[in-house]
Image (cartoon, rainbow, N blue to C red; front, side, top):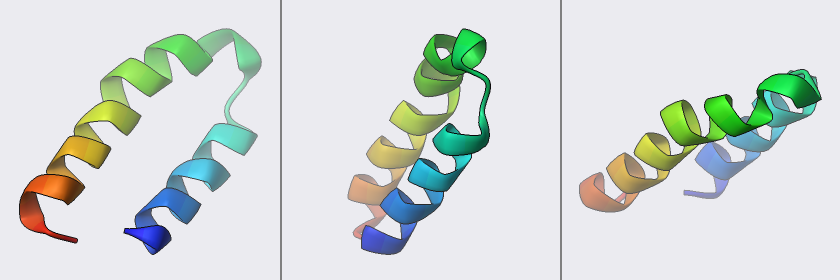
Length: 40
């Protein structure tokens, strides 16, 4: 889980501020949910 969070943090840091909202809802949330669901 920590690795996934680190990767997400890196992606967010390089993503333009303008698209953070859409990026978060379309990528980060499913990634977190999927990570929890799979136990990783």
